[in-house]
Image 1 (cartoon, rainbow, N blue to C red):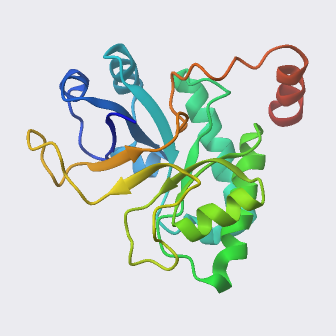
Image 2 (cartoon, helix red, strand yellow):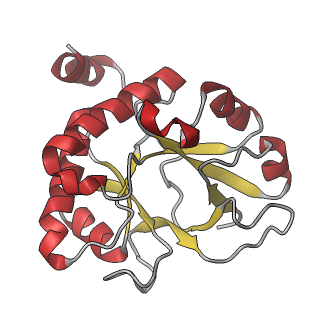
Length: 219
């Protein structure tokens, strides 16, 4: 598929310049106010969409938050969905959570528990994960994710070759010399749905499904 997806933290590029360069979308952070330096703002969100870029929301409090297991995952999933709603992000779009470290086999169940909690806290079913091939494949096998984003860190346990379950794959390449190379990461697109908004394949949650979700999760 043509185009690349950028992810970045403290950098705030002009969305029109990204669009003009052929970037098709961005992955941007959600987190608690303690991490506000990297979090997408309402103005940024609106400008990105206004420039014709797609936006994928990516929750990451810290690189190793997943070690908090189910309970922390639940809290983070609930916060992520609340913040996404405040931006106007559609309910049907999954939020990706980051497992931004290597996960050893002995730790896999903790990562699974965090993802399960993240899904339950958000209240909208399977979400997404940024992780190694090993973790992405394990979570897909359990039906806990619908979007996989493979990390570029091929030295991490179980992170190679390219993951067939990954919708986008982070690369070490920097193909856009007009942008500061240290400010962004570049991702190649491998599936039509990488969690982005807008996306034509989803319809809005309506009727009984939406009502049940609202009563069960938000009271």
